[in-house]
Image 1 (cartoon, rainbow, N blue to C red):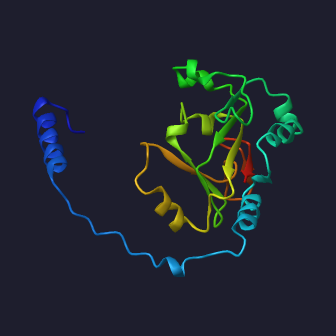
Image 2: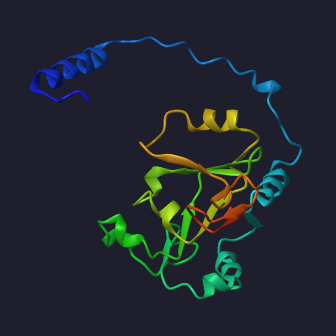
Image 3: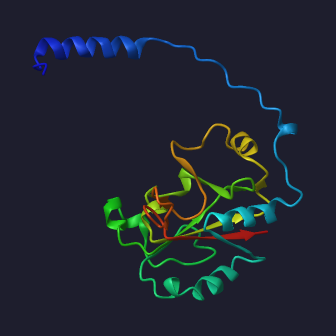
Length: 205
């Protein structure tokens, strides 16, 4: 084993500094023929179908006031003690995340109600902008997750989705599609393996 000395540390740092200072021009991104990408006659219906296949559930609503009534019929929501709502105009929360500095304090959150920027029919995903998240861990640490997104903000495919994102507004953003899941070699699928156990999506006008 190589013994770490001041000389080896200095040499390694010199190599890293040279790599960092080297300007490399990569190949440009390919041009996508948008007229040849997948499109759907009814993107909202396709989104609902795909989301269902990955374990999520969508609700088409006409008013955000319906969200509370729908959630209250779900036992794990009715029994929830710690609910974080990032869409307070739609449904109130029971935990003020603005007063929390340490994300570790969110380990016992039952539900996170988040806002989506747009949805993708192709894969049932919703883009959540990091600027709307006081703590990014809220999307992953909560036992259950609900996302509110307008069905008028529905794109057909991921190419359209990335074009819509353009230059991200914040350093963090993520596509969310269905609850977390994992499967072993025996093809046994487990939902809620390393994130939310279930995902509810509310499609507003």
